[in-house]
Length: 356
Image (tube, rainbow, N blue to C red; front, side, top):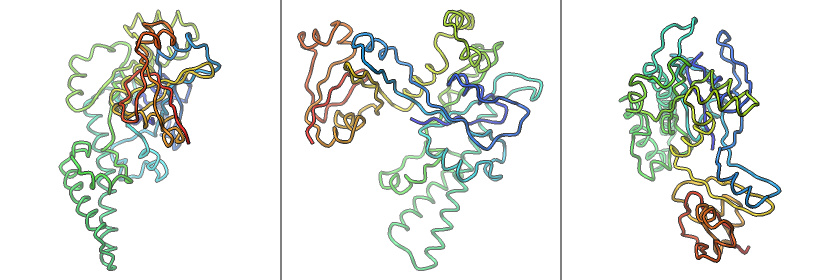
């Protein structure tokens, strides 16, 4: 899973990145936006992986991961001014979701804050990126038509893009446009920005964290939102003493780390679940879409398992914890053999039988 952090310049975006990754990327409100993004891989916090490790004592434990990319700060006019190079724009298009960091703290440099206006500004910029791309693509199709290359596929693409253009011109993101399977297919490679799942991070100060006075419900009318105290949580992420970290978190009323809160929220927003493979060699969490079948889960592990799938040996994490051991699971009737069409549930423990 790849999540892109975007936001206005000086919104605390890199501060949030540091809080999530425990890294120390340079944060300087006075510097110009740099061209290169910050990139990190973070583990998805899941206490079930720890419990399974305690039970199986494997040589290796592997958590699910999320790739976080902190992109250059945007401003009004970024789409037209080419703030994103073609390389960076192609990278941002590969994101599974976009996370907008919106400023909710005061500083001497920028004065008053207006989170709702900032969200609207960035949303408009993303929409403009999509508008410019659509118009450019339609111009290229028209050029091909003028050269006599008027195929049925291009005609259908032109019709689809004109429908998209009308929707964007109404200032509506593409995630609100219902497309047919054929329309989805013809634009899949374009990876429109406003078609991606969109999450807002309200980056509050220590003095106003948890006291939004109706701000969060206002944002929730149009976007999923989660609140962080960015600077405070960046400092927390640098602490080595867990007791000190817990004490400061309790003082702020923070129950989990920024990383754990974001990864759980992202899983819920994107419709992801985790299943596990266990054994003396490795305990590992795997990420799939909610509703995926056993054979699709096998493919997440290795294509050979998907190709030669026979059966999935299956039991739930909850059944394992309740029984106390895998042996007890097998003896109490909660151990199952499932076929390729079985819909995997969050927390399932799977072992794939296959033959290639």
